[in-house]
Every structure is written in C-alpha cells, then in structure tokens.
Length: 55
Image (cartoon, rainbow, N blue to C red; front, side):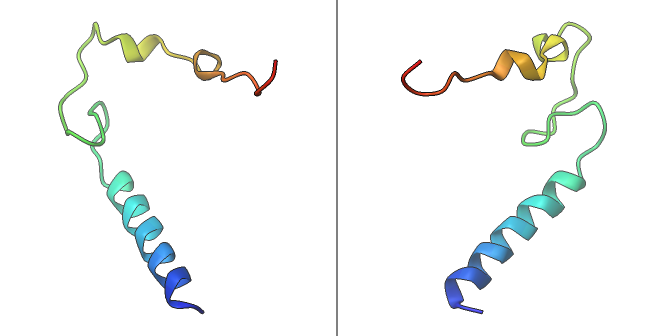
C-alpha cells in the first residue's frame, strides 16, 4: 500500500469514527442540539439535487 493510500485511508477512517460518535438530535460538527424549528429538519435529498453540467 502506498503512503498516499495509507494517509487517505486513515483520514477517511477518522472522519467515519468521528461521525459515528455524535449524539442523536445534535449537529455532528458543532455538537449543538437541534431545535424544534430548525429548517434542516424539513430538508429532503431532492433539495440537494445538482443538475448535470450543460443542461
């Protein structure tokens, strides 16, 4: 395994472990608790659609 591949694997594994350790109903990066009126609760995957280039 190349040094770059080892570094990349370590970075991805670290991010995955940090994301898995978050509490429910909190934002994963800041750790702040989600409020009942937070707009992110109404987001859907379709809201994040990015059309292909050239369309």
